[in-house]
Length: 339
Image (cartoon, rainbow, N blue to C red; front, side, top):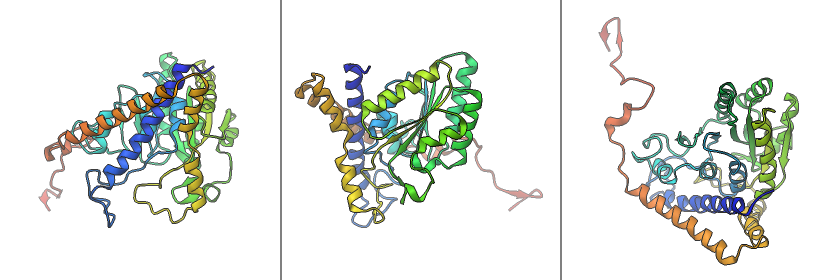
């Protein structure tokens, strides 16, 4: 049964994630308007935000330890926050600063924090194989550590996901696959992308448990994820979990969302998992003042991280070839003659 401290932790993680995304919108749009210029401003390039996904990351990661491995998709911030990734260094990475998690070279889709075993990738479904590898390593070491791979519903037909399910099932690995179903695969509605309404049904083809949480209620996610994580730790193999979430913003910042019906956007704004959890806290005797204090702490944490990141130095050009899997490029020669 969920405890009050766990409810409080989930709430603060969810509020932090929501406020973080909303503040990143403001920072990202600086210099990019009125004519949207993706290369301008303090955060150049694409930015995929997870407002509306908070219950998924918080409800799953509350069951995890630092030695458990988590891989995230291209929309990773809420998961990283719930897993305990250093918020200041994550923010510095998003701003491209040298004190970032990857020294400013990875950006927001390629975060890596070995202190808490978190990584993410911009390639669809490609967090699944590394999570399976981490689960295999834990099994071979004889530990009870688990791995979790998060992905979107648009990724469930990808080979990396299906092959990972198969290998994890055959090897009975301690891994949990979490599908975040926000109804949209970039600009395509789910029903035009895949042939199953419930992504957890994919588990049937691999003789695995498949569970769907039909709402983004953090307490429902907590219960379903807790059972799956316990199953993995006890050596009973993987689980496929799908969670209904909602996309409160576009696929990426600057997305005009002309493909999306207005009613769908309105419903996403109305289905607020954070306010639902706040009401749950009140029912359990947590005062309105205490709930507001948690919101205030989250806001202070976000503002502090952004202010710190913006003060950090940018990488020097000389660092371009450091910490990468290649040597500096030498002039091309053909037959010993420099071209």
